[in-house]
Image (tube, rainbow, N blue to C red; front, side):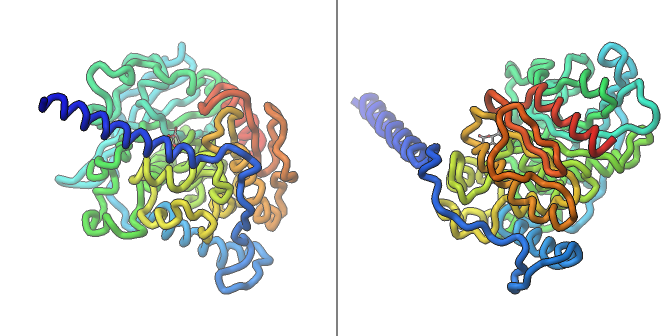
Length: 422
Ligand code: GTR
């Protein structure tokens, strides 16, 4: 009898959870005709109501206001404190990729004493280079070992928290299709990649194992409305990788690009917004909280993202769950803070969850600031056809297929970097 009661209870609980999930899914809009009328917050009007007419006014008044608002209401505040970082080269293989590249693994040790965190960077340098090379910095999801077949590439430092003993994530090259390293190296670029779990293991309960826990006052700040979330910490990590690359003789640190896919694309644009060393900033399918306009409420929305990933943003973002029209900012403002540096937003046709049109419009509306600099942004509100990249100072493409990073995406990014970073 008791067993029966348990079964009934479990069944009832399951159906409650499922109804919750389907009720939430029912609220996801995929119908363009149901996109609400919305007004985007003005890029070129200051908080005190003044028009911003010059680059100087933008740089001294409006851009800092926007960055401050994004810290307060979306990503949380990046701590100003500097923490110690030590770099140790742990291996160097000059014969990687059939002799085309040198693979260097570098251990980053953040912090000192008891409270430290380790991360491993894989730096891939083209062997055929004449002089210093440009570099593309990009996190990977499944570990450095997932990007290639080289046998000596180490697992991420906190892999045991993320991947069980028999997990397919442990297979070498399990995301190799996202990393056409030979093509990138052949075109003269270095790649610097690190597993994002090394910086913040991507689970709400693992915050105390992340780089955030190295900062003073970490525990007291945890519930502050503007305490930084994982995306902020990943963005901070991108900058720490740039610090190291500035010390590498083979790298031209004036030509550093940051590229991220999806959640790492959100982190890439936030890193690009805050750190002007990134000369090209690439958002691959970054969607909600990245390039896509939130006020369209198409595909993933603020309610879903803050519920499913409570650790990604600052707690204050929850104020806009189901209430996007009250947001005093939108993603075109985030993208505009990257100007006059180069911005590339890319989408995939089947990736409706990320709202390709919203991603395009985010980049399009950022154009107002690029125009202030005399640069050429996206010129039409209409999206280009599939596989027709626009490589203006602000760039965009949409390709066929699903949420992913493909060789086509990389080829487009390299073509763009050839124009603006070579
Ligand atoms: C999804 C999430 C998106 C996107 C994606 C990813 O589940 O809802 O915002 O970040 O994950 O990172 O692949």
